[in-house]
Amino acid sequence: MTRHEKNMTDIPHEPSALDLIASSAASAQSRRRRARLTNTAIGVAGFLVLLVVWKLSVDVFKVPPYILPAPDEVFIALWSGIAVSPSSPLGYYLPLWSTLSNALMGFLIGGCLGLVVGSLMAEFRPVETALMPYAFALQSLPKVAIAPLIVIWCGFGDGSKVAMAALLAFFPMLVNSFAGMRSADIERIELMKALSATRLETYRLVKLPSAAPYIFAGLDMGIVYALLGTIVAEFLGAQEGMGVVITKAQAVTDVAGVFAVLVILGITGIALHLAVRWTQRSLIHWVDRGQH
Amino acid sequence: MNIAPTIDARAATRSGPLIEAGGIVKIYPTVSGEPVLALDSLNMAVGDGEFVCLVGPSGCGKSTMLRLLAGLDRADAGTMSLAGKRIDGPSEEVGVVFQQATLLPWLSVWQNVTVPLRVGGHSIAGRESSVRDLLRIAGLTGFENKYPYELSGGMQQRVAIVRALVRDPKLLLMDEPFGALDALTREKMNAELQRIWLASRKTVVLITHSIDEAVFLGDRVIVMSARPGRIIRELEVNLPRPRIAAETFGHPEHIRIAREIRMLLEGGDAP
Image 1 (tube, each protein chain N blue to C red):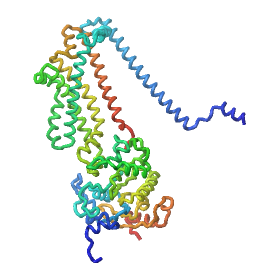
Image 2: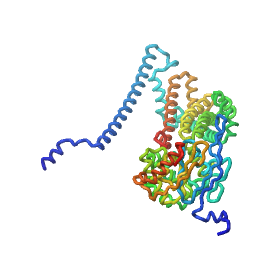
Image 3: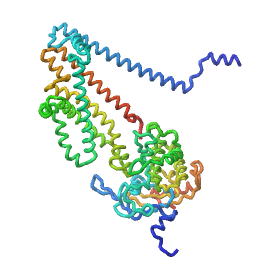
Image 4: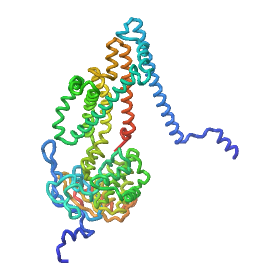
């Protein structure tokens, strides 16, 4: 009896199904983690190779800094804009805040208007018939070309920046919310009909949530477009903002300074995109899961 | 009684027909331009508290009939009434269960089943406990905060049934509610449905293409012909309740009725 027990502890017990499931889940998790780590490593390595190639080609071909500055010069310019007090007029903080707040304000206005107009078009056929031609016409127009007009109408202040950002954010939201509303499952709409739900109730409970993935795709595009619109409006005349920093650097052929601003804007764009994606993931939990 | 019964008197009698449909014609336009006659002068009556099953081949218009009863479509001719009132649109006296559970994936089970109490001028106030009772009857207690994608197909359909019952309707319409489930789950769901029905005693009209399901569940089975949809026979099912699959399916009465329906649907003349 005691020997038997001893044997039991000595010999590793037969793995049960539960153990197998647990270990396979654990190994799947560690596989995923390893894959993520590998991807990050590849990304970092690629970036370092890019920097080395950039530095070497600038040195070897003796590219003058007013054409293409070396990465270290860009870094110095970048650092000189970052390592200052937030209230310094030489730093990036004030212009970035100006650009960002105008872009976000425009994004908010344009996005909301796009959602409202898109919803109205999806909901009421006459609205669709009346507005669709203009939507198409404006959609195919290079909207940046409207920027000079916007500056004439709204002046050199924040107004024209917000308006330009709103204009650019408006269209992706319009198109996506319209398409999203129309994609709503007909059976779910029928269900609401059988329940004598009002139009607004059907919109709120069925159509808006159905359109949510589309709306977020529109937001994702819209936020980047809003930033673009603000910068373009700043090029045409502004007192502050990242666009102004670029034009000032360009005026004195401080190409490294231009590059530094581009890096900041790139990072800002990625951060805004990630913010939208994160919101989407925490809000739309039901997509991509088996559903009936 | 030698006085002709008035509408009121008829409505007051519990055993009187809850649904009366006469001369129902439904024509559908098609893309090719040739209109299709889906239902042709169909007459039907369903008693209060009765469980009626409609069986027929695909495209026999049984779903059309259900849509008309639900007030989702209008008939081109004929009259239809529910408890003496003309059916001219969706009614709160009718609960509908579709083939797909048609849950809203962005809402939890509790939010899904209470949708009917939050739209169409209804209020959830004071109804929470009756919703909880229904969830308990359907075996969904403890799943209130789950989302539809966390449930099995059978459970999703049970959520849909509870949702159809929360307004306490007189009539429950079901359009092949278990058609999307596997055979074993389906048999289990049939027993569940019978249990829910025995507990609630609603009038049920269930559409199915499963003859066994129809005979197992129905007090009466209505057999429909292929397009244009007509009723070819109505069969009473006199099997004791609660019916249990293991016993009922082997019962001579079940076998006899199922055989008769099969012969009718195969186009042969029933004995």
